[in-house]
Amino acid sequence: MNKIAKYINQHIIGNVFDSPSILEKYSTDRSALKITPRMVAIPENTSDVRRIVRFVNQLSKKSVHLPISVRGSGLDKTGADLGTGLVLSTEHLNKILEIDDHSRLVRVQAGVTLGQLNSALALYGLTVPVLADPRETIGGLISNFTTDAGAGKYNGIYYYVDCLEAIVSTGDAIQTNRYNRRHLTKKLDLTSYEGEIYREIDQLIEDKSELIAELGGRNTVDAAGYQMITQVVRDPVRSFDLLPLFYAAQGTLGVITEVILHCSVLQPSVRHFVAAFESISSAESYIQEIMPLMPEELNLYDARMFKTSADHGKDPALFAPKFNKGYFVWAGFDDKPRHINKKLKKCLKLLPQNAAAVTETDDNTTDFQRFYSAIVSYLNNDVSGERTPICDDFYVPSEHLSNFLTDLRDLEKTYGQELPVFGSFSTSNYSVRPDIQLNTVEGRQFVLKFINDFDSLLREHSGSITGGAPEGRLKAVVAEKHFTDEEVALYTKIKNIFDPEEIFAPDIKLGATTNATVRHLRASYLNDVIS
Ligand SMILES: Cc1cc2nc3c(=O)[nH]c(=O)nc-3n(C[C@H](O)[C@H](O)[C@H](O)COP(=O)(O)OP(=O)(O)OC[C@H]3O[C@@H](n4cnc5c(N)ncnc54)[C@H](O)[C@@H]3O)c2cc1C
Figure 1: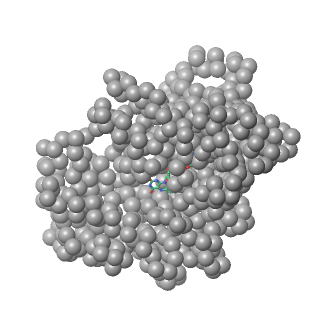
Figure 2: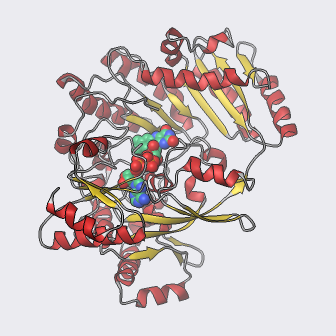
Figure 3: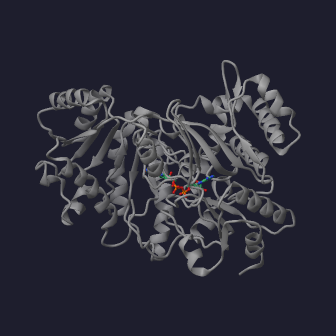
């Protein structure tokens, strides 16, 4: 075992490993990248995290660089949880610490998964209504600022986090809170590192007020950089909260260790509705009509993605014969049963003549579950390569969607492959999964070229490649192009205030380079089911 790992092991309750088989496991996530770390730390508690961070900071001051990459469940699609130094996994920080059903508050460690949390809350008739993969951790959801499929109705994770505790680069713990000016003064007067962070961020917001106002007023959705600086100070009372900075920070400002969330009342049931349309224009007109019914999710799927699924026995046309071309609109309603029935009837009533639809009943629930399995089948049954996520969760404003899809056909011709789009109409976040052959040089060259071309196409339609999740390592190669020099200076300063020694993932977001990203592209396929 290397000396550093051994030293840390002597000082924490958890473990640090450097055996090749363990390092291999933490060298990949859901992205097209592979980076083998020098060691993996699995802290058992906050005190372990503090000791690890403090030690790495001290090493850095002696010019020994061991960057920390924080990892939740490792489902990131941009390689933001991978790193060459120490991967700090929150897998054992997985305790639900308190549930106060009366005030609908829950306190958890950051490695608690969404599925674990919602199973526990369900016993109290409560939920955190985020429609994401149940394996995602709360720390990961915050750090990736994930726009989930239910965010159109329930506003996403941002709406449910009240405050958090994070370990910053000195190993100190800071607790976020929304402070009025009087309480903020107390924070500004602190002589600790926490006080320094408060003072410097407060000063930065004052110095860069014009730029921050301009960023806040932009009419687009983009999670790149540290754009949530716009939410730290809120009018009219100019309250101040560091919490927003941790959204989309991807572990670059500190390790989130605890989170307090507030919950919603769990709806008793959900029923779905799916309709098939021959053209995007008829699907869009219909969607506009059913939007006011406030579905929990409202998704759009290009029917071409189901052709592969049908070849593997997962055919939506089995339960709806006309479902073989055009676009599918999928809606879920999670109201009281009486209201759901009314809404489903309304969906059928509004349906144009040339469309086909099926509503979920007690008898066909399994068909609806099969619809989802058909998507997973498409994502995993590629004959010539892998449908690795490289352009997931991009943003296209609804008024540009139709033209964007038309122009996407040109890209399909250029690349000689179909690029069916799927995603959430209610949040305007979609994905495409090109067929990639990572085991060839041409395949890896394709990744970078495709991301660049796709990003240009999105920009032509007022979209953004980092709309639903931040840039990490992979999308950083295009995201940074769009920052002005002033923005880069602002984001660099934020990073510097929290992490002057650059110990937290210095090579993602602003620190990512095309050369490094290309070097880290995987040359083999993931031995796992991709979702
Ligand atoms: C391009 C892209 C598209 C996505 N699309 C979808 C989607 O369609 N549906 C969906 O449900 N999700 C999507 N996600 C979200 C992603 O799958 C999860 O949000 C994320 O992976 C959270 O789960 P995790 O626990 O696996 O976190 P990880 O993948 O392990 O980590 C994600 C990021 O959060 C940081 N992090 C994790 N825990 C902490 C912590 N405690 N403190 C500080 N930093 C931390 C990591 O360093 C990393 O940067 C997308 C993400 C990206 C980047």
